[in-house]
Length: 358
Ligand code: PMP
Image 1 (cartoon, helix red, strand yellow):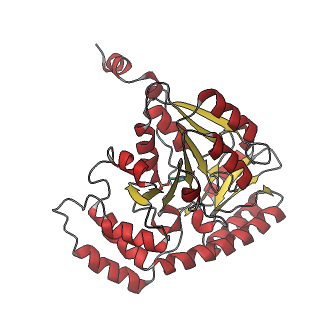
Image 2: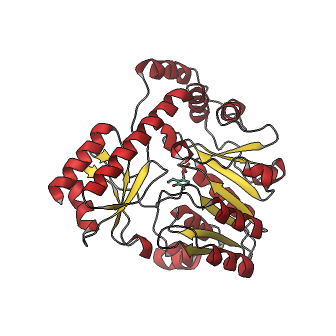
């Protein structure tokens, strides 16, 4: 049997039909594609951190529950004592753990679309059904559409990203409430972009016993560390924790995250600057003729009124600027581009390049 035949026989057809998560080549580019924080740490902070890393015991397994990190998170994010914290190698891993935990044959994950692509991809990885309910044209939730799926299919897991990626908006609280109250399944409020948002859903853990709150350190400035976190009632987290790999948060990540959490004011300040830059970039995109959508995140989705989003994306690459072209990703994103907010100079370079291109 040829290797191709063996692959056909052994690898599930849904997996064979997938493409690995696409990551653009950003070498030498201004990187405005992946919602990272563009700022470095001050030199004295870097020096202190390097001293800590030098003392890490790489010959030992990491602490299985990373207590220094969870204590730092509890303090910085004001997580009440009655809720537990579960850590993942990025929130991607937490999505996977949640999906694995509910993956009975026929179980369903529900999420609004366009949304974060990993919800659907992970559903496929673990053999779950996935239902994506399109948002309304203005990117608000189609509550009736969501409620209909909840009534018909009783999804085990619902993901609601607040703010949503790639649209950048928050949904009406009444709409979220309607969904949570109608669902017997777990509802995960994904607050990946919380550092840039005007709304925090931690108190929903008090209100509802089927809500979990998921966050990450990726957008606040630590994308390279890979640290995501889930907050919730111990009853739920005890179950999810059973399928977490024992050493999923490595020694270097634990030491670096614990250190960064002690200096969270530095990261907070950087996020405040990014929020200001976001408002500047928004106005500039409007002035250039884009239909830009108001954002509560560290990126802006904007629609090109002409028919050339992909050409603009390619032309920006020749100007050494990498953004994300969303055209073709979903019918509601036709002619849309997503710009991660960068440093002032990077955003200026982007606007200068767009002026030259348009
Ligand atoms: N949730 C949302 C809504 C996201 O946009 C992202 C990253 N793009 C993530 C989760 C994953 O973040 P990470 O795995 O870096 O923690």
